[in-house]
Image 1 (cartoon, helix red, strand yellow):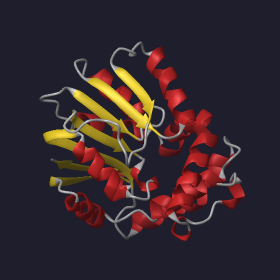
Image 2 (cartoon, rainbow, N blue to C red):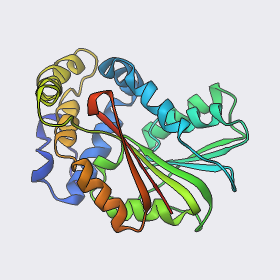
Image 3 (cartoon, helix red, strand yellow):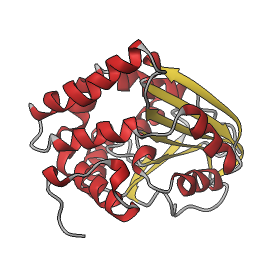
Length: 248
């Protein structure tokens, strides 16, 4: 694929799967140095609370192993490792620049023996069936074109009664909060991002990806279509983020 320029990012619903993957790689490679800071700043540090809530819902009962899919800079993997001292954690991502930053964080927290971050494709996980108690993905699945395949892979690698968890930025129900959030995403967020990153267009694209993410009802239906059971939906912060949990 030809190198993308920030001003060339099209709308999410105007690109094919291959181009979408290329755009996502380009975006995250270009904002890696500011990624953690912007996550905290643009969410008012709510991203920290959302991950903590996700970790609090995890249930380790057999393998005591956790897989963080689309781990990015490793925040969810590290939160899990710090919360559950007896759990070993693996993380995968397909953007090497993000992984490198995550590996630095693992080393700085002296968690090398329990946390391993490696390059990997969410739709082709290089792990055996029934290897983990829990798999999770935080703020990643909206950027994966084949969401069904990613969910199927996450289900495959957990044991029976294990959990698949998806934490994702969503939109509130129609009404005041939806209008407010839409204005923030499309009007305010890109301007704030422009103050801190050379590729502010990345946040225009990411805002568009949030607005085009399936509704809660549709996403639960997708989880159920791959065989996940007892699916739960936990809206967070007026619905601007949602935690989905299903079991195998």
